[in-house]
Amino acid sequence: MMRHISLLVIVVLISIIVNGQESFHSFKTETLEGEEFDMASLKGKKILVVNTASKCGLTPQYEELEKLYKEYGGDNFVIIGFPANNFKEQEPGSASEIREFCTRNYGVTFPMMNKISVKGDDMDPIYQWLTQKSKNGKLDSEVGWNFQKYMIDENGNLVNMVKPMKKPYTNKIIDWLKN
Image (tube, rainbow, N blue to C red):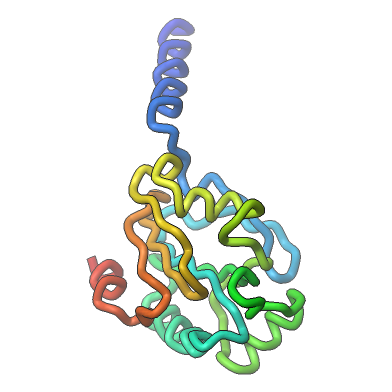
């Protein structure tokens, strides 16, 4: 019995080393309110990860994101917003200022995380995973601007990416949500 368990552990470790992959569900982060948020709590849901900014020409996408969340969100789907100040300092606010802005102007109810970096030397580990095929097993990408969207399946695997200029109600996202 012990030999079988040891063999199983070895097989799992080799699989992790060979694939070099961890699931999106293996990450933890913090909400805008400073509370720990474990991505493992989202197992079984499709997840749309979006880097956001309050002073960007694409900021009105918050409205469509909230509409999408209200229409499809719940037991099977969630949107996770990650404010980032990487592009022309378009997210300069504090956590409380970001929360107030999103709530007052767009009625945002989907989970918003603390501000992070989505590119460069200080890139958050979640975005390293999202943008590097060697980590996510699916594709290499670079965050081109605010409101880039990453689609994660129910098992924590990266499915696809949607560029910032594409609005949340693009066919790529709607078809993914319906299937």
